[in-house]
Amino acid sequence: MLRIGGLTPYSATDYPGCFSAVVFCQGCPWHCHYCHNPHLLAAGAPPAMAWDEVVDFLGRRRGLLDAVVFSGGEPTLQDGLAEAARAVKALGFKVGLHTAGMYPERLRELLPLFNWVGMDIKAPFADYEQITGVAGSGAKARNSARWILDSGVDYEFRTTVHSALLSREALAALGRELAAMGAQHYVLQEFRQQGCAEPLPPTAPAYLRCGTVERMSQQFRQFSVRKA
Image (cartoon, rainbow, N blue to C red; front, top):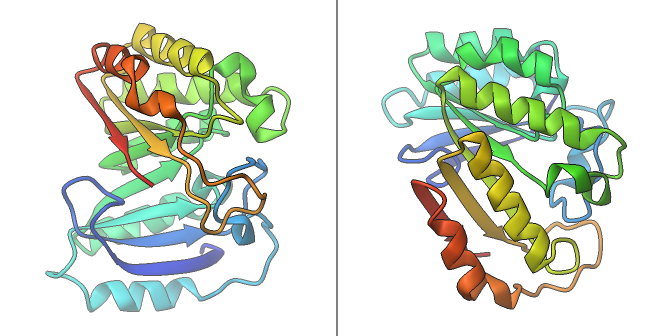
């Protein structure tokens, strides 16, 4: 059903307020400089396990876990995601999704299947190509963010911050852009070196601890900085 690149059997951080398992889906067409799962980029790579193995595992975890999160890679790349989400719901779990929003129309169709969505917002939408290496990626991400906001599904927008890729001014502009769209839940994530395919220095921008972030926080109902 799905090409699976890995499974985390227990997480307290991937679905807010829930203990979850995380299913990592194989394949992603973007090549973000700070990606810490580069082994998941190739869509045709041999799967790490079969979907039936995941279902068997989840069947033994009913009553111990609250949710299952589909992450990646990019889960919406795969046609089997809808059927997989329904199967997880049938087992009694909440269902979460981690996405970069690269397939907005497909995401729109899938949103009713999910209880919560975490979307990575890379940069101001006009600057997306600097992060993803793909022309037109910003327009797709903007459309996906709009579908999430319009859907009524619980969500979190989050941005990974590295000073070499996102300046103080760009971050402030992104905050204003999201607030103007009506976003209420926003998290900044410090870059972490672990698993990163490119040798970016593991430094946290000083502006994550200054007035820029304080001003941004006033634009959102829920706002936080997630440490590396």
